[in-house]
Amino acid sequence: MSDAAGDAPLTVAPYELDEALLDATRADGRARVLVTRPQSTAVILGRSSRPEVEVHTAHCAADGVSLYRRRGGGCSVVLDPGNVVVSVTVTAEGLRLADHFARLSAWLVDGLARSDVPHVIRRDVSDLCLGDRKIAGACMYRARNLLLYTVSLLVEPDLDLLDRYLRHPPREPAYRQGRAHRDFVTTIHHHHGSTAEQLTTRLRTALEPPVL
Image (cartoon, rainbow, N blue to C red; front, side, top):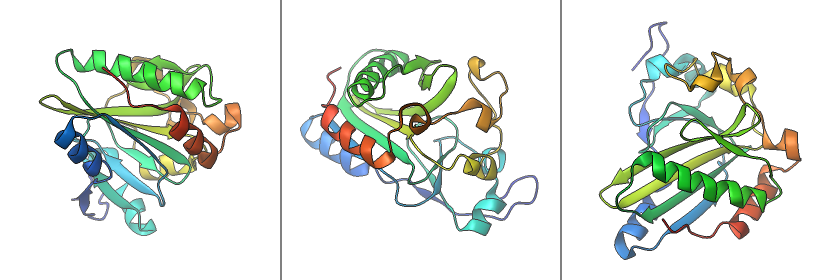
């Protein structure tokens, strides 16, 4: 699997972080929340992402960065220990995915406000922003009445890794207006001072499983 520029081939493994959550909720119908920090740097592809289009695979190979494919859609992202990942599983019937995104985004924005990260707004369908800068991207997977919602929060990541590992995405929300990665995103630490470790602890206390 290589890109048009001749990048080295890389294996793309399944992203299994949320599998235990899905299995548990599938078994008993109870909503669950998991808040984690990545232990190393990795590139996570969306369900239909093409590495040769979205990723600088030669840079990943040179740096020993693994590629994984998640269940949810959207474009590829970089995760490192400066990110905080919030994963939710819940049973949900009816409603369009856009409606679920709206409800779950509001649930997370409220939890962030109670975790000393105020003024977060939702833009487009699934992005969370401070002003016009993105601080989080979300994806969703749905199988019958089971829903998985996953958000990666940019708390204090190494933003230089975005340009090193990710190409400009093949599709983007209108509010991005063609901006490069570093001009499009910002970090929670920059605006509110929270570290990834602090926010992980606060969110684990603030976030109760949602009811849809």
